[in-house]
Each structure stands twice: as structure tokens, then as C-alpha cells.
Amino acid sequence: MTPEAVAAALIAGKTPDMTDMVAYWLATDAAARPKAETVAVLAALSAAPAQDSRVEAFVRYVDESYEQTRLSQAADAVNIVGTGGGASTFNISTTASFVAAAAGARVLKSGSSAYSGAVGSADILSALGLGRAMPMPVLDAMLSETGIAFAPASAYAPICRRLAIAAQPLPFKVIGRFVNGLGPLICPFEVKASVVGTATSETFGLIRRVAARTGRRLLAVHSELGVDELLSIGRNRLGWADAPEAEGFDPASIGFAPGPLVLLQGGTLEQNLILLQDVLRGTAPRAALETVALNAGSVLYAAGLASDLAAGAGQALECLHSGAALAKLREAQRFAQSVRRSLEAAE
Image (cartoon, rainbow, N blue to C red; front, side, top):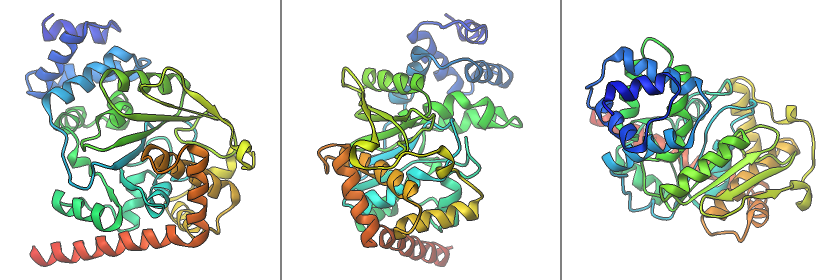
């Protein structure tokens, strides 16, 4: 099919074959397609329910066209990120990344500005003084020295930026929902594994299937309350991409307390910032502590540092109560402050 025919098919809700769709993204990335067509294709893909083959075509194009960045310290790191969507909560996975690092994991955190909630990972990291993009050698050094680093948006495949520019002045958060949703599948760094949170059971299945077909070591997690993270207050599902079946996990089985979703609700940037630090101090409400421990535990499990999710959650709780998690945040902040001073001195 010609690129024009592929675009027309996608806009009409049809699905061309894989080879044609990969070729279409090549032409789009080469700026060989008109802006209006790109906007129409993005809008159509974002408005329709995600389909495996459409997502896989984009992922395969990125795999074939761009090499992942190899950091010497990332070979045993775990990337933790969510697909967005679902109910709004505080910044659970961002908080959990500090806990997992305090427990001994190397963590490369991905995230963006707010998608389903008022405050996204990038927003809160910026408020913590950790939002500035670093040169790759410095990012590698941060992983080495602190055990945690943050993947900058600039590291992702250039086609993502080109699509965002093509969509202007329309908000990419809306028209680019298709690309945002598959973002966890195109981590720009070589890592040991990814933990990907999904807000719906449909996305949970899709992420696992596409990850399996494209050779990714990925652990998908999903709260049955409709959140793209594990929650301590209700049942969850988790499953490796290459496992034949996913498994259920009831936090009550390890003594975690059930409760309403409002216990984990997000607020303003200032409120989320306070809650994040209270969790890391071990002084936050029980539901927040246990939920963050579950998500940090999933990272420890994916890293091979815990035998299963329950064991990882237990290790994470110990870090929360010992003060090690808050100390990890402060260590990361000191590193970032040092980098900022060095970069400013060089300007």
C-alpha cells in the first residue's frame, strides 16, 4: 500500500498489514507526509480502542530505526512507568522508585507531565529539583552513585517529538494519546526489565502481548480498581510478558488493609510533594505506605532482588520505616544540585 492508502485506511478505522504500517511511520518520520494527514492519523488512532497490530507496528518501527542507549550502569536497572489513564492518585510510582533504589535496586524512572491526574511524574520531579535533563555520561554516573536516575523525554525516539510538533497547536496529550499509551514499550535505554502499570484490563493484555512479540522483558501490573499501578486497598493483576498466564494478587493476603480509592487520591503539586516525602519518612497514612511498598516491591521482584511481589513489598516496607527511602531522595537531590552547579558554571 502507498502511504496515502495506509493513512486513509487508518483514518477510516481499518488496519493495514504490519509491513505497510511500519513503512508509513518511516515516511512520517522522514517528514514525507503532510501535517494535516499526520494530525488526522493521530486523531483516529487516539480516538479508537488500541489494537495490538497498530501498537506493534509503531514499536517495531522504533526498534528498527533507533538503537537503544546503552549506559554502563543500566544493564541491571529496572524502568518503572505507567501507561496513564484511569483514576487519579498521588505520584505512586515516582515515590516507589526511591524506595526500590533504597532497597538495593537500580531504577531508571520514566514519566511525563500529568496525563490522568493533576500532577505527573515530570512535574513532581521538577519540584524536587530532579527534573533537569542530564548528559548521558552524567545520567550514567547518577545511576552508579545513587542507584536511581530519570529518563529525559529528549532521550526518546525523535519520531515522538516530531509527532508532537506536527500536532501543534492541538494538545498532544489528547491527539497523541495513542503514542502516549505505548510509550512504556519504547523505553530508550537498555535495561534489565520494565515494570509497566496499566489502568485497564484491556491495556494490561495488550502491553503483555506486544511486549512478548517484540522481545521485551516486561512485568505488567494492573489494579482492578482502574489505576495504572498496584494498590494495597484492592485486588491486582501482574504478569510477565512471556508468561502464559497473568496472576492475581490480593494485598490482604500479606496483611495490607482494604479501603476506598479516595485514600490514595492525588491533589495539587504542593499536596503531592508533601505526601511523597511523608511516605518516604514512613509517616504517611497506612494505605499510601502499603501501596508504595507494593510498587517498589514489584521493581525489586523484576530486578531479581525479591523472590516474588510479597517478598519485595516486605523489603520495601522495611526501607520506609528505617528512613532509608527518604535518605535516598536526599542523596539524589544532592547529586542533582551538584550537577546543576557544574553545568551553570560551564555556561
